Image 1 (cartoon, rainbow, N blue to C red):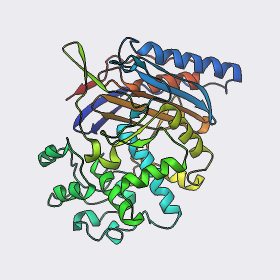
Image 2: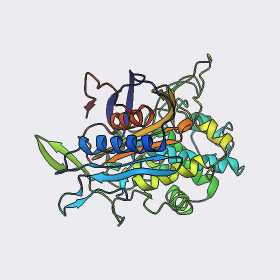
Image 3: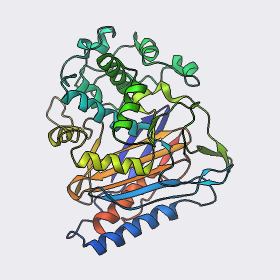
Image 4: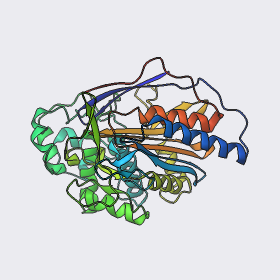
Length: 380
């Protein structure tokens, strides 16, 4: 059993997953793989009530989509259904897109992962400038979380710049010396966005949208909530048994940590580009998928923008995300060339992380894992 405590945009979620309950057998034939994909899709479809919000899902093998689709409504008021082109909030999956974009800048010689970032952003307060990009991207910076800062509340409802978030945090002391510990902190990626802006001379918004355009990811965007984004889902919560529209927060306060949007089909395309070496080199991708070490030599379970673990005896890289009204998750089994993603527009719905674990287990073994004794606990 693996237990992951994730702090996302003011929400603490305890996610309980099963791993290692079943083991992979011989590589499946094409027919067996197709049957597994069908079973995985069925598992996704049966997870959601088709009369309410739901999700989009995709399973691919070596860049080829085996199965994809949607279930439930993208917009309940207009009766529009979810599809693999529906645009969802990604939450903390944004970190993985940002990390790969940063590693592209590293390969161009514009960023050194182990250079103190004051070299790129001399305007930063001393405690922020003393960390490296590698420490930021692997959550070993020691910088405190900004979403718990009460001064942030006025900015949750309106657009805000990375500089404004930095100014809110400038007098808050570090939690530990850089590199000493692992602590998952969204503010790390606010600083990553700031460094990107200093190095490229572009806003993070323009930079990441140009990245998406270069990768032909037409359903992937920076989430300006007042911008018209074709195919964007509406997002829902539930109170006293009644489905409600989620609060209209402005996610610019989490910046590169959680402000991006995408579709299941775009995410499968992105995974294909990664596996084919079209985005970064194989050597650089290996760095992103290697757990960061601590001073005593022990490894964390996080690389550069990716969680790293194991499922059914196979190496796995993954991430999940939560925002008001949405949840999302993906996983990659690199040695098998498998990619699974589930993007949901209902925060209250069953865990998308649990679901991709089940779907990936099906793809690896042909069987469902045992069910957890307890459901994930979500607390406001």
